[in-house]
Image (cartoon, rainbow, N blue to C red; front, side, top):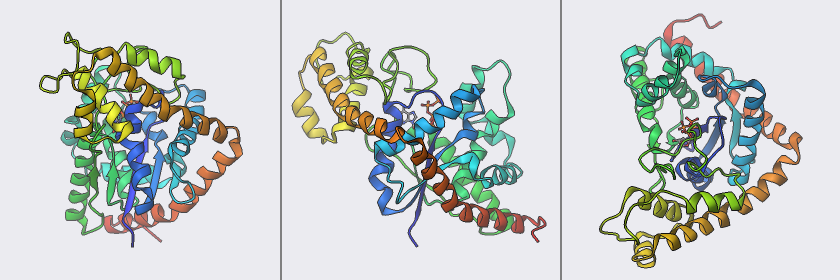
Length: 328
Ligand code: AQP
């Protein structure tokens, strides 16, 4: 049996080049080597309040962007998390074997809860739901950006704890990080991860930004006080621009160094901007074509849920049996 790949994106804010280089590009690269499932994790999105109409349209936008980025829905199942009921059910079952201390240690919980007046329980439970998303499909490989590595470790801890309490049940999922672009930083502040929810017009390049906007954002990116690229003394902002270029171009490190050494920052930014635009323009064209037919997208998502539901149902049933719940 082919090993299973599982990953997902929250339908919040605007999908950006960090999400693309850190996660989606990797999914596209490996999807045909495995049985692949890619989720739009709407149950995760509501751990922070989302205006309902906005959430509904974001779910379809993300589905369109998955396909425009190269996800092949004929091969890979594209699934809206809340349409497969087992995710929420398994999440509760796993909550019961997860010590609270494990969840309180999560850095994303600490960062996100600081920004909230009232901290919803869902924010704390977020990594348990993520563990359920992965374990419900017995996924062996989870390609994510580096910010999700801690949650993946927790998913393994939860699986191990369950297996040791109730007997071997879950496949242990491995984290797959991209070699380049695992953590794309904000253009306005290269000490902070590029994030959909961060404020600031110059922070992130969205996949659907107009070419003129992309150029402007990159030309204004924060660098440092040096005039030109010096590979012996690279500042964080320049490292970020170079890794964005490398992530899109696929160039080797030696080619990057030969090409960019000594280049003035203004020219570096122009080349980064053109590289990003040359990849996003065709992606945006495909996105417009795909979303011009809403019935097509709805069909892809319905078919995706139908394809994976039997796997999810079988896992939930097995887990309930192992735990001694009533399974007539
Ligand atoms: N800056 C990033 N660099 C590389 N990878 C990234 N990812 C996110 N930001 C970067 C990866 O994208 C996938 C989907 O992310 P998500 O929707 O689950 O949410 P997130 O990780 O919390 O990302 P954001 O953009 O910061 O969203 P908000 O602001 O809504 O929380 C994941 O694989 C993630 O690692």
